[in-house]
Structures are given as structure tokens and as C-alpha cells.
Length: 420
View 1 (cartoon, rainbow, N blue to C red):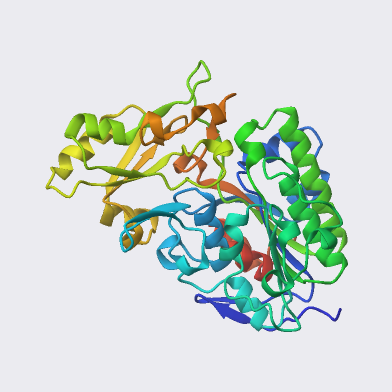
View 2: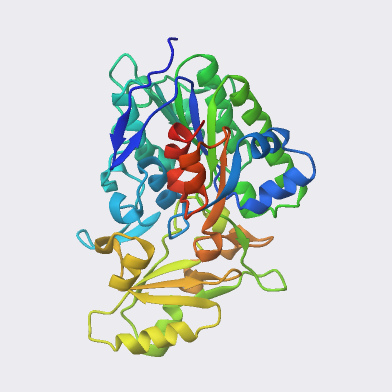
């Protein structure tokens, strides 16, 4: 394969200057910085340790709510949800009157960096653990031209087709069978696929997005988590050995959300509202997705649609704010500005909970059996700050920027533009 194209391109107002080397951006789903610290302290991530010294390691602020689809969409567009339109994994679509998954590219309102890079001549590779993300991440990619990109999920790797994924049965590319989605292997498979694409010269600009099953189930200091991050580091080493410039961030962090006895610490928002004010409320939990074993559809961010009948908004906000574990309640317009959200896809109120608390609809709505053994989840302010790692030392311009309010969706710009 010839030297990767270095033609500059602009996407959503940002100029990108790709280096004449393979470039890889990794989103380590659910990777609170504590996971990296725990593995580094035990000598299990020597490659990350090297990058921390020779490149750059800091922190970045993610998009709110701190959920997967929201932040992956921001990372691949370089803009907040107010611009790209994806404000959750799940929302109430007023036009259809349906509660729907926001996992389709039809909901995306901004071009992706990957599509812009493909137009500029880069060969694109996209691998995500969860199938729910693939359509969004592959938005705007044309699988019909000779330079064709590759885009598939480890969850459905065997089902990949050349006309829609750029590869026929991705197991043949990776050289390994499709792993269970509820496993650490689902994430390691993503990274191995990236290594395979570089080795086989199928791509020279990669976006690799893992899943947070391990982080939902295991705290940073536990053996399964430590072994998982050691595996991540091994694949990182392979990417570096292949000459790649690597940027690493996360979509959100992760915290235990439970009482001292280990039971989930839940505020059932819809139940509380109905009990206090009567029926007609609709509570939407944007964390909702097909992977209920991860979190039981319980996260720290909720959307409230008020009854059609007139109601005292100030009284509702005051009541919700008084509930133990609730930290913020905002009306739509203020919440849209504060959290950079698409106002037309929001409810009337936004509710956010604390570090150890999640928000639910009603007790009957959630099957707590799927999260037996303890609940770890995300969605609020306490999962907003995430790691931000570059394999290359930063040039003066980006070193100065790194001292300010860095966002996780700056990662492509820093990776492609920020090296010395």
C-alpha cells in the first residue's frame, strides 16, 4: 500500500491534516481513568506507560448525557449533540409518537470525520463492538468504490457483507470467530480487527470503539478488569509496532450505583411523579439499549415529558430536586443550552442524579435480576470526565490547548494535527 494520503479536509468547521502514517483513534467504552491507573500501578500496561511519558496523557470532558451513542457520535463528528442530533441511546420521537432507539444514521445531522477523510483519499476502517453503533459510525461511507472502507461490529462480524460492510464475513479478516457480546473478548476483538486491517493494508485511518461490559460488571482493582486492560495494552502495542499514530479516549466513565448492602440505588422518577401529581408523565431513560445485562436500563440521566394537562412546572422541578440522590433538574431550554443537546429531541425536563444513584421509570419497568451482583452505570456528571491519551508528544499549539477545556470529541483533531 502506498503512503497514506495527506490531503487536508474540513468537517463541521474543523480542519484536519492527516499524517503520512496510519492513524488510529480508539474509544475505550466505559473507561474511567481509575481503570488505567489500576492497571498501570500493577505494571500491566507498559505500552500505555510509554505513551504517558513519551506522548501525552490527560483528561477530557465528554458530551452529556454520558452515554455511548451520544459520545461516539460526537467523537466521529467533532461536534456536540446539539449539532449532530444524537442526544441519547433512546428517545421519544414526537413525530411518530413512539419511543425509539437512536441507533440509525438517519438521526445524524452532521457529517462524520471518517466520511470526510475518505473523500480526501484515506482508507477507512471502522470496528465497533456493539452493532447498535455501526450504522451511525459508517454514515456517509461509500462501500462501492475501489478504495472502499471497512465497517463492521464484533457482535455481528460473521454477518458482514462486502456491499454493506466492505468485507465479506469479517471473521476471515480478523482470523477469529465472533465473540459473545457479553464478554471482554468483544472489545479485544475490535482492537485485533484494527491490527489485522493495518497488517493487511485494508485501512490507514481507523476508528475502534469497544464495549463496556467489563466496566459495568467489575471495579478497576478486580482481577477481570486488570486482565482486560492488560489485553488492551497488548493490542495497543501491536498498533504502535505497525507505525500507527494513536489517540485514545472514552465515551464515558463508570461508577457503582448501589446501596451499602449491594442493592441498586434507584430513584423511580415516573413513580414518584405519579404518586405526587397524578398520571400523564412519560419518563424516558436515554441509556436504554438492547444490552440490558450491562445496566438494566438504569443510568444517571432521565428525560421527563409532562402531562398534556397544565401543570405547575416550578412545583414539579422543586419536588424532583428534593428527591434524595437527584442533583440537577432543568427545564428544556436551559438544559439544551447547558448540556449542548438538540432541543427538538428532548423532553420538558432533564433530571440528573449523583455519583452513586441511578434513575428509573417504575419498579415494574426494570428487571433487576439481570444486574444481580451489583450495579455499575453512568450517564451523569460523575462519568463525564474521561482519559485522553496521544501516542505522540503534542506540538506547542495543541499542548496549549490541552491545558484548557479539552473535549473527548477533540480526539481526531489532536491525533491528526497535534503531533510534533
